[in-house]
Image 1 (cartoon, rainbow, N blue to C red):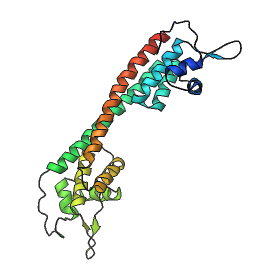
Image 2: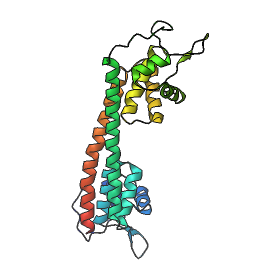
Image 3: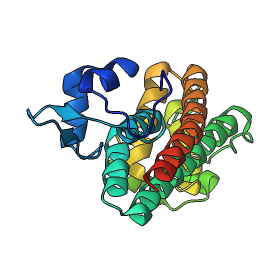
Image 4: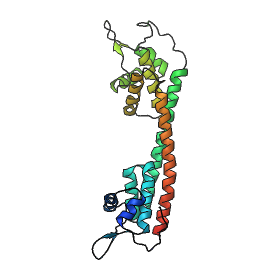
Length: 244
C-alpha cells in the first residue's frame, strides 16, 4: 500500500487515490457504491479515511482482474455489510464460472482435434456430387438423428444448400466439418446458442487452423484469471482480518 500505516492514522481521499493511481473522485465513487466503508468526517465536513479503507481499496483492485468489476463490487458490499457468507458465495460462483470456461475451452479444442484427425468419411449411397452428402448419411456418420441436423440448421450451425431438382438438403465438405464440430461441442455440454458464433468463426477463417491462435489466447486469459483470483483472495483475506 505504498507506506506503513498506523491503525489510528487518518488519511485524506488524495492519500488513497495517489497510492493506487486513482483520482479522488474515483475514491469517493467507490465509497458511495459501498465498495469502501463509510468515511469519517472532520468538523468541517471533509472526508477522512483510515488504513482499513486502504485495505478495502487494495482488496477491491486486486479482486477485479479475476472476478470482474460487478462481482467484485458485490463482494465488497457484502463484506462491508457484515455478510461474509454472501461474499464467499459470490467468490465461489466466480470460481465455478472459471472452471466451466476451462471445460468449454477443452471441449472446443477436442472438437477441433477431431476435425483434423477424425476417421475417414464412409462413402454415402448415391452421392449428390463430389464431396457432398445427404442428411441421412451425415446423420448416420455423426450418430445423431436427421431431426437433430435440422435443429442445428435452424440454429445456424450448418447451412446446407437445397438440390434444385429434389429439394433435398445437400451438405458439402464445409457443412460436414461444421456438423462434426457441433457434435463434439454438444457432447461437451455446449449450448446451441454458444456454438453458432464459434462455427461462424470457423467458416470465416475457412477452417479450424486459424483458430489456434485464438484458442491459445483464450487459454492464456483463463490462466491469468486464475492467478488473479489467487492474488485477490490474499488481499481479501487481509481485509477480512483487518476488519476483525
